[in-house]
Amino acid sequence: MTKIALITGITGQDGSYLAEFLLQKEYEVHGIIRRSSSFNTGRIEHLYIKKAIRNMKLKRKIELHYGDMTDSTNLIRLIREIKPDEIYNLAAQSHVKVSFEVPEYTADTDGIGVLRLIEAVRFLGYEKKTKIYQASTSELFGKVQEVPQRETTPFYPRSPYAVAKLYAYWIVKNYREAYNMFAVNGILFNHESERRGETFVTRKITLAASRIAQGKQEKLYLGNMDARRDWGHAKDYVECMWLMLQHKKPEDFIIATGEMHTVREFCTLAFKEAGIELRWEGVGIEEKGIDKNTEKLLVEVDPKYFRPTEVDQLQGDPSKAKKVLGWNPMATSFELLVKLMVKSDMELVMKENKY
Ligand code: NDP
Ligand code: GDR
Image 1 (tube, rainbow, N blue to C red):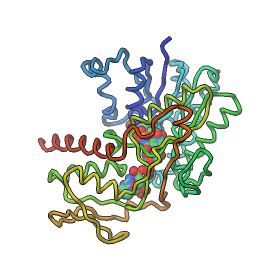
Image 2 (tube, rainbow, N blue to C red):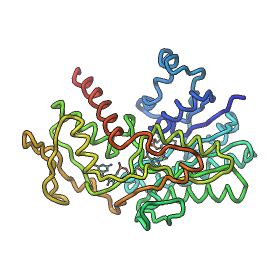
Image 3 (spheres, rainbow, N blue to C red):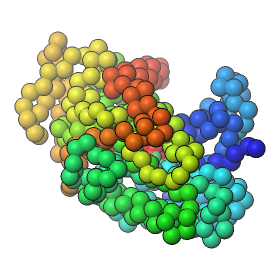
Image 4 (cartoon, rainbow, N blue to C red):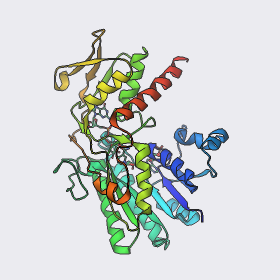
């Protein structure tokens, strides 16, 4: 029997990889998209092109529906029509810094939105039919109490985003216990890719390094260079979302590589991949990244990118996912991740040069 999946946030980084993954597994895939005044389906566009569909040997297409996490009647109607076996809730205002600017909207979408979704499933009487995956986050750990962070590490959120996601985490756990639903939290650490949004630090760096290397940008301005993150590749992580819903019992899992690097390290490596050797001078807001060959100043700190409360270091322990789900946390190494992102951005910027 063909399985039916509903993906919220299908136009985002993870949504696009997950849609591909599920189509390859011959799922019928439905996605919720938001009405936008400009084009917002670029990441899933290839799933409509006949040649790409043939190359990927896809038998099915995705079906898109307008909707929003802030609209409960829309969610109820869509779930009633689609009758999904699996819901992957990836929709969110996902930018931590932006959540300080739009805290109420972030709480509504990322927190109460999850309640709307899970309650819609319960209200329709699909508790036994529909499994739910919730996109939880390492940001829940915030002000770190233990390194590395495990499923048992206490939470200490440090942004309106993380606080909203904390509510979502607990409402999922509560519905699982109260109504015996198959609803799980994937506590995913940072995962990046060639499709990562351009305002997240990794993509901002790989795009800037590519533009600087091709003479299209003068300088890169960054915030906290000392922040440390556990960065994996999004393509590897969406597989784990699926594995969690195939597991015999509903459980929460940490998904991470287990390695941690600073923003500075990411930057050094990305510029190196783009053909530029950086040397660092100064500390804090005085820190500068200088081209070793030309002595040109290429990277500077701008305090406007600092956050009112920062998460200094995140490093996950993926042993449970490895042992129980058989997932490979190091399928893409840190070095390969940076290489893939820079390669893709170098090509993208090359095309920009034409216009
Ligand atoms: P993106 O920001 O790339 O994508 C977010 C998606 O949510 C987009 O499709 C966006 O639509 C959609 N969306 C935003 N607000 C709403 C709303 N009100 N109603 C419906 N849809 C909405 O995020 P990622 O793909 O990187 O992340 C996926 C999920 O995983 C998010 O929930 C994120 O918080 C979480 N997460 C991500 C991690 C990461 O490192 N990437 C780590 C841990 C958790 P549109 O395209 O129209 O803007
Ligand atoms: P994060 O990702 O906040 O971890 O949230 P982001 O890439 O935005 O920041 C990572 C770290 O880099 C520092 N930083 C900068 N960040 C941005 N965006 N821009 C800069 O110029 C810059 N300079 C330094 C930040 O201060 C931070 O410490 C991501 C999102 O995908 C969330 O949705 C997800 O839940 C978490 O990862 C896990």
